[in-house]
Length: 500
Image (tube, rainbow, N blue to C red; front, side, top):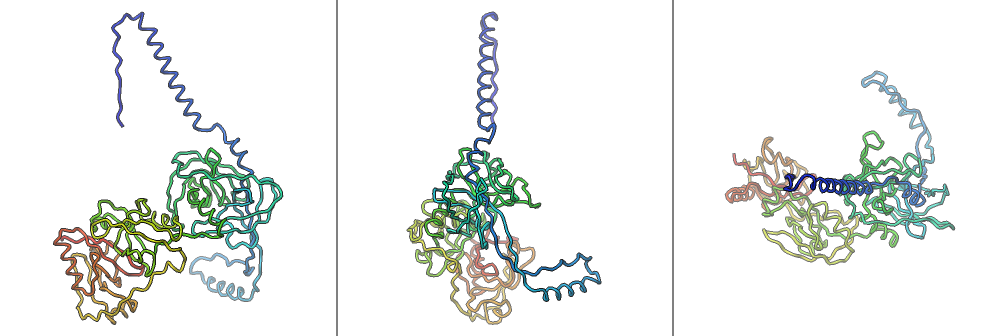
């Protein structure tokens, strides 16, 4: 930060004449400071009472009931590990459990939701109503209404309910969460621990959080108090607009520790509109498996920045395959939007209509290319990778140690297939040994992994690997890009070339 200081010099006029001017300047400066302080004070509300009074009638409690089948029996006592009575009590309780008849009981759970539109529609989380036999919506005036499920989406954890009533319901509208900034005030209303109509306030702590709960994570983080029972409740801005749906908390203790997460309205609104229209969500599907572009991978591919999504595999006959997208391509832009990080691409694809023709800019062989992809429809069955064609190489090439990478490889044969339990159609070169202090070990390569490509070129024998690594070293490359197939599926790994 640059600090600028001004120095006042004595004016070349008599002191008697300068005094009033100095006093006037000080008064003006104080006035400006006071006005600034008042403006800053106005940015933080003195009270949330008017906003809460306006919004409370639009927030509902959701009670669900389901029938649970199980055996009613006492719990086994806690015994010290290795106690002589431990095995005795275990056998007793196991035998008693088998003799006890199955019993049914009704279990209830509580959550939150909010009213939208004029047709009695209620938005909540899918996990609030998942598996329930009965759903009851409880209004702010304690009116209880039976609800029916309109539609739900497990990938974003959202659901829409419908209630019928002769009295008009007060609805709220969505705001634009993309305009919300870190530090903005937010208000959460919900049903924590069954205490309905609870209002809490805080700020937006962070945006774009990925908590590994689903493929489209893009949460708003807040320090507004959110607890069990708040799920499905709305997060409001100071205009009274819904900018998020409270969904999850981080809590080692089970209570609020000031880290709560809400699905942003930019994600919620299009999903809700599809659920209302179709009863389900229809998402675009590209048909690729992708991974992040690391600094090392970017260097091996000649990219200036570690951005984009690296295509690890392409589903046979999928939209990407038909558009000639290939493994090893890096997707840089999708539909004119930059793919700054791998995890952003799935959401970009999902937001596009099924059948839409989209321009995709890729990085291939050191230059940019633009392809056009006609998106398919995402379905669970289409997520499975097509089997890779190929057969036993039949190569009698001996085992080779590649010191540059710190690993030992051999050919794919019937013997190595059986030893490492490889698929019948496995192709490439099998890793049989990894130096514990070598560069391959640092990247998690293990015996049994199959090297399919080196430097984006297929390999069929250990000699191929040695040759391509040697060429990369002579070219002055600091690392070489391997395409591996192992327990985690196909993945690209940039392995440093040991200069020792």
